[in-house]
Amino acid sequence: MRRDSKLSGVLHVLLHMAEVPGPMTSEDLGRVMQTNPVVIRRIMAGLRDQGLVSSEKGHGGGWTLSCDFNAVTLRDIYEALGAPEIFAMGNRSDAPGCLVEVAVNKALDGAFEAAEALLMERFGQVTLAALSRDFHAGMIAHGRQIDVNAVHGG
Image 1 (cartoon, rainbow, N blue to C red):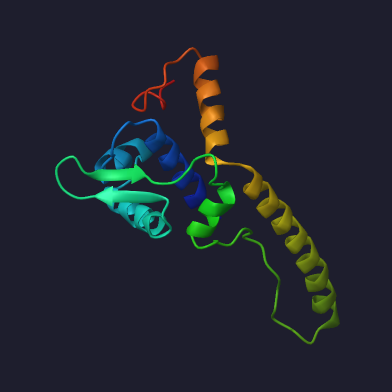
Image 2: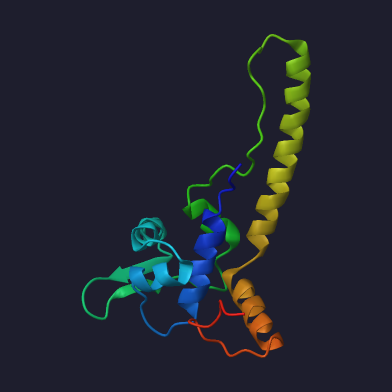
């Protein structure tokens, strides 16, 4: 089963953008993320609608951050993406009158709800600034300069 990596990808894009002093085009971001610029534009449009990024058309234009990295959390980004399903697992609902299915679903519902609440709480505690600091610390620990074009190197 394929995992949904959109949240991870968007966070990746935002951190790259934070390293560049000016706008980044969809083509630039597509190269960094190894994806089609159309995919980037689709993702970024949703973030723009939430006020997290802005865009300028024309020569010298592109995408820029318009949010406070110290205030925006993983939960904010998750919600800006439309709060996609957290778990690929779910309850069986083939026989709603079956008492075994009812008991199993009740137990699973409680576990899923508790796990999701814990994850959302953690998402609310991690800011984009914290991710950026962690990235910078990793680059320094590996003896590498902060360079958006070199961060994917070995």
